[in-house]
Amino acid sequence: MAKESRYWKDWLDNAEENLQRVEKHLKDGDMEDAAFHLQQAIEKYLKGLLLSKGWKFKPIHDLERLLDDVVQFDSDFERFMGDLRRG
Image (cartoon, rainbow, N blue to C red; front, side, top):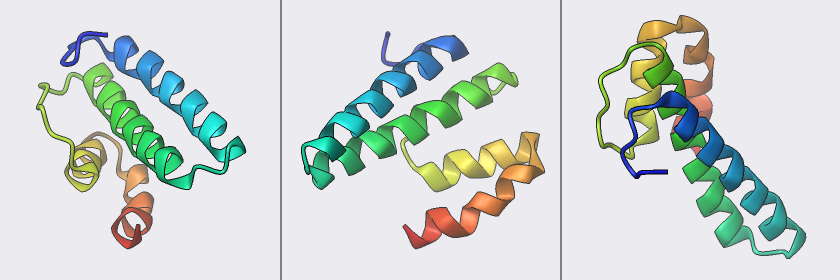
């Protein structure tokens, strides 16, 4: 995937690849790499969702800011804000 693809499906496909890496690292007991790839997967899922809603791409990596943008399209996602801030 081009790092800053504007096509939402690219982001979701890449997020799935990150989740596969999470599973592998968890099996290997490597929590640090698992956590890194989990953060990457969440970021990519959020960007894919946003792009599918017509969001203008922003090259940001802050999950809170991305979730704030998601909430503008779907307020149901607001329930995840507390978990994200605690993490």
